[in-house]
Length: 235
Image (cartoon, rainbow, N blue to C red; front, side, top):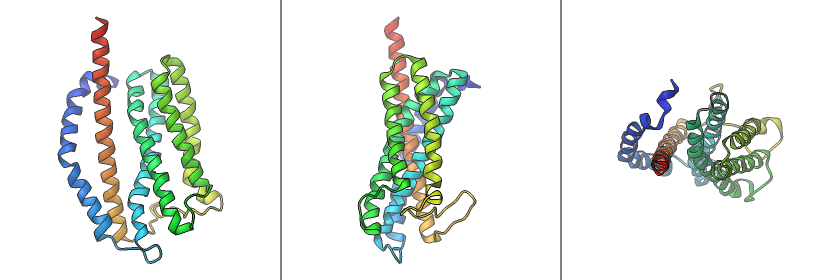
């Protein structure tokens, strides 16, 4: 099964997917922005500032999801020694860092009109900053540590620490008294967001997912080309 993940097998498929996404991405983006900025109504308490939600929430969701995927890939790489999973993580880490930074920055901007301050050492905000730090260490490790065994050990440790942090991010608003509001959409299916805001939110989530897929595949394609050039230079 793991032979499917060989770079040579995936190259043509990746090229086709990239071209398909590029031809449709701006349609997704324009649709999402239209719903988020025009069709969606202002909140009765937060007024127009609630529109930050359409960037903040999908970015936060994806930053957590990407780290979860990276953790699984790291464990599979540790068990089965599939080096291509290391390349996957190398491509995913910058995207995760981008979304975690976006979540923190937009959260700060949203916090000013909501809480009256740009930043507070809220449990969720602090744990999100820690997630950014983990992503950064991931990137540095994969880029500068050439010894595979050492890099794999560091990444595995980071993954375990990160899993604990993910639970803190998720449940911090329930475990401690924080300024951050509880989740409006839960894994149990409880939703406290009106459909007029929920639909734009999920459209923007799709936009972010499509963008993530595009960036990941372009970075992965670049890594494949680098590998091929490196192998040619050895001949």
